[in-house]
Image (cartoon, rainbow, N blue to C red; front, side, top):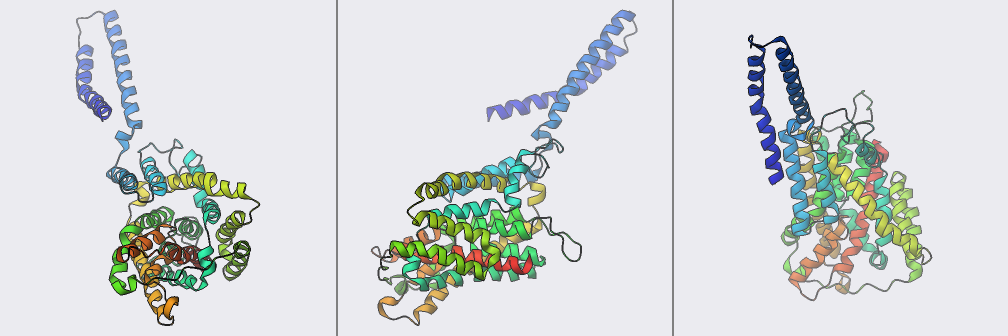
Length: 440
């Protein structure tokens, strides 16, 4: 902070000195009593001083202080808030710290044309952003997710997959809401996927439908909404512990929150190996456009469960996913330059994102209660696990587990909640593929 005050002090001093230097030059040029040689020396000296001043002034014009706008400062503040929430409250720190830092990087003021900004062709950030624009990073993220996910709970109780499907109502509800607010069909489809609470899927679909490149039938170009959509999706993923508990307490009675589910059956190693192959075939035949996401997801899981490729699985779920998460977070954050991000469209996307997440959570909870109408005795499910149908893995499952413990300290719901949670990942990818098929 002291350094900032020193820099501001130096720049202020230069501005104060400008009229003094100008008056000195004028005074020296009007001195008729000096000899020609002294006049020449004085002029040369004044020229050197003036050149030095112009050099300092030119340097100042290249600094961020001369080019900063109120929008830049606002976005930098938002980036700092993201980092604060990640560190202070442990809200998705692996995501919010890279994104928050990226927001700061993207809003440091610069002079255009020096290949600095993320949208300037040839800049380093622009090359890194290529992985976002072309949808390269999301499938790599899914590879890592597959390599670290245990589908045992879903295999043991397949009916819980319906909860993951029910939560996708948030996707299609948001899609209709975006159309109502005036977004074009491809843009509305990209915005809708925020309802799945799946950041990589949201980036993948927006890179295909709302990338600022595709030209519609009427000759207009779709808007570039990748930044606002990605930030909204990751923000609401991080706010799962804040958004979901009030909805759980509102919709689920205390009695239902205490329902104890019977332990899931043991799943054999053979079932775990067969599942990713069967799931890959079924899901991609239903939604071929989601192949990049689902293919990598189940490949990662097969690497984990095969028992023969542990080294590859370890790389996918650690080093690879860590590297891609850093690149994805920083570049998505840097794409939120104030002049592009602070728009009416961005504000509407954030509002729709919040609404979609609420609708998705409510859809899962209500459908869980509906399922219990047809289940008897020990087969009944705790409706709280319906909230885990959104694909914020594993945070949503943890929130369900925590909320269940508040009602009954001996009721452990984590393993049960993981079933709709992982099915939500699959469901959001399928929903993205369906939207891409119709709107791409």
